[in-house]
Image (tube, rainbow, N blue to C red; front, side, top):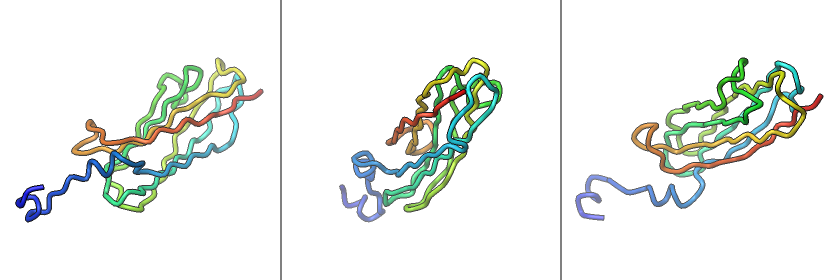
Length: 139
């Protein structure tokens, strides 16, 4: 760190943010199960808490397998929600609709929830937290 960086307050926080998990992620389904062979939806509620000491630009991406969708038609298999800047200690909740179709067979489906920490804009990723959650489809 040079003298000018000290004078103007520029610090490199990338090493601090890439070394540990910047978010605490909690998930829940409402209702808990999906009915197989029906066109119905459940909500995946994702709660994200900024546990780092910095303000972070945050986005959440939910990816579903082929037999499910994130819309009523079932054509879209992923959804990104941009949360903007989260202050240190702030918690936000996102709800994503997960829909089944007539092709949804009784099984456990793995959904991938990824919370990204960005810098500059949403194209540049600094760190991420990935969770795999399972949704059960029954008759």
